[in-house]
Image 1 (tube, rainbow, N blue to C red):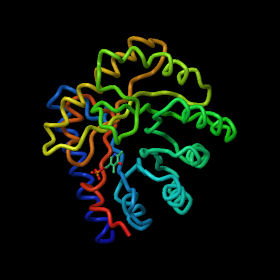
Image 2 (image 1 turned 45 degrees about the vertical axis):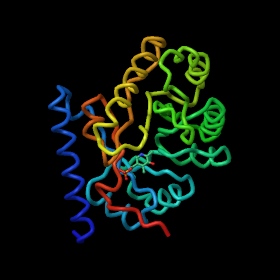
Image 3 (image 1 turned 60 degrees about the vertical axis):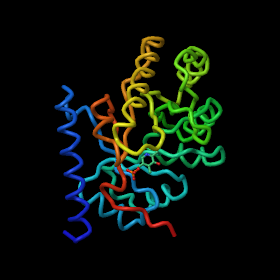
Image 4 (image 1 turned 180 degrees about the vertical axis):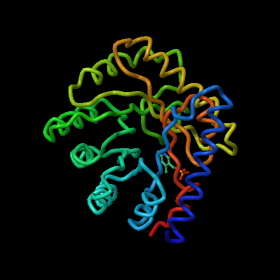
Length: 242
Ligand SMILES: *Cc1c(COP(=O)(O)O)cnc(C)c1O
């Protein structure tokens, strides 16, 4: 085992440990939480090392960068590739054809495009709908900071649920940047309430997944019901932007 694999493995196992403790502490089963190792802006050899270290779900933010890695690591067929970043309209086809999961469906228009390209690729892709629970202007996702207006979203969400080649599985959210992990808690709770709201409104649909929490706050996310946490720097180190 190389030094790189060894150090990633150590951090990967330690994050799994923390997930386990947080789950147990809040009366949840550790198996209910899946760890997405976020490898955006990391070179292929780091992604390869993460796979050797045990990562089974990899998260990427940029369509082209992700697809390049998927293609160069094709023989690592046991891993799942999850798209977690904003998807530009013109990248929808690339994403639909190459990724196993999409966490970042943030508009009806994008959902329709992805559905069309999934149909062309002959696949049905599990997706999460992304919501902006903090209300920041700069961020993608349906605006849901105002709880009294959630019902206004139902028509669009129903349209997405009817798309034949996307299978909605739940929600994704990213809280505003805070000083502490505790700061994120209210946003995780809000995401959880939003998920429960949709589950009540659409009892025939599947809203079981909740993707939330990053390196800085994933334990709190697990305590608040996350089923996917997306952890990058705490496992593969800081990103070297070139
Ligand atoms: C980068 C990113 C992450 C991981 O962030 P870390 O701080 O590196 O753990 C998670 N989710 C999204 C949407 C991201 O863009």
